[in-house]
Image (cartoon, rainbow, N blue to C red; front, side, top):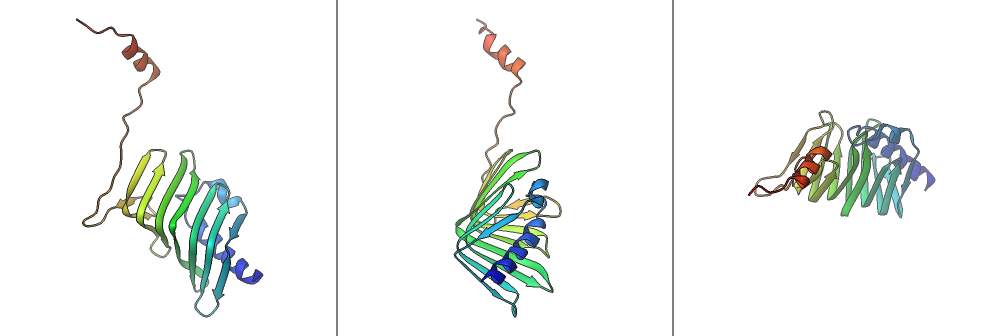
Length: 177
């Protein structure tokens, strides 16, 4: 069992280090804690499955899922699928604040350098909230695609905050008659 958990931990470290856009740099230097009710690894297929209350913590990174599947090809992690009701991810973004994301499935496709979130996706970032049924995040460019045919994407956009001087002028101005 310890060998299986070490193998799963190695896969997770390799996977999460490949996601620099979500990561605070200091997180990558922290130890990773992985926990689940069960772990099963197949050397033949290169697949490790964690099930039951999956916890992954590293620095500011926090992931909670019901199930995690990690696929290795030629010694490299090629695909990670996290499933839950929902999968929950939180992490500090360097100099930008905290990112929080929920989805029924989060899939890391490392060869394609993208993360695909599906099923009730909600991403809270310091700049705002994005929700929809499908969001694709490109790890190499930092670009994000959202939506699918027949679906909707919702992004409330807050007005630019007023400066203190402008806010004070608005409050002290008397209405003109």
